[in-house]
Image (cartoon, rainbow, N blue to C red):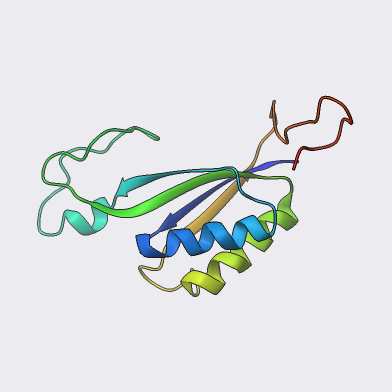
Length: 125
């Protein structure tokens, strides 16, 4: 069963190294974006707006980008565990405060992943 992974990297300078590490274990079809950390940028102010899940747009109300969020697919749970190990080699223990996080959840329906070769029926490299 395929899994959706979401990695939030608090240090944007580590993203390239994480992507390189994941490519070495054949997890390289990732989407990433700048993200806003409301818990840090809103110190001293009551929350004004809580966005809907996966609401994308530019920061507003004085918010600032402070992390990078990566989304990607893993073929199975073993691959997710390998991604966690590789991410922690770059980022350090994800259980440490302000060191990012990785979550994954199983996908019941996935179409188009992994990409299939038109000739051999095997996953394309």
